[in-house]
Length: 192
Image (cartoon, rainbow, N blue to C red; front, side, top):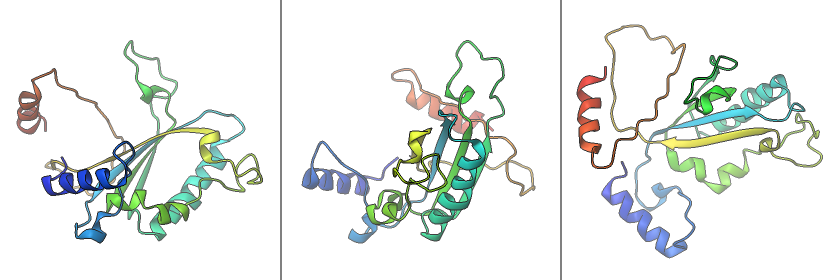
């Protein structure tokens, strides 16, 4: 949920820049504190010319390292799809065809869209099938779906373990029209 102050600022910026095109910029420069968040990236290799070995090497040893050195993220967790190749359910989602999931802890969600910082995180590489000569971005061979999430609530289990999760289960829950409050109450009081 965006705070009223931030919402008002984005409305003013949207109006000043262009009402039909708006990219979140680093609002800390106009007096707003950084907002922490989580970036999720679903990745699926679509072209066999991009091998998993090459993609993973670039993503882990180049892309993530650049983001950490630029303070875009201070923690990145990667997962491979356990359900890949499993029999699909009738209502199968993208999770059945996605190869990888990246979870990025963002100390400041606005840094992700800072054009100067993004320009220092190239999406092309000499490691890629074109050898970097054609300057093709990674999305030439890999479909990605990226979204940024802001925290709204924290649940903590009773376990004292500090291990990293071995599995991540993602559920998309959309309440029926008018049932938002009921779902919110149920989720905050019953789901543990």
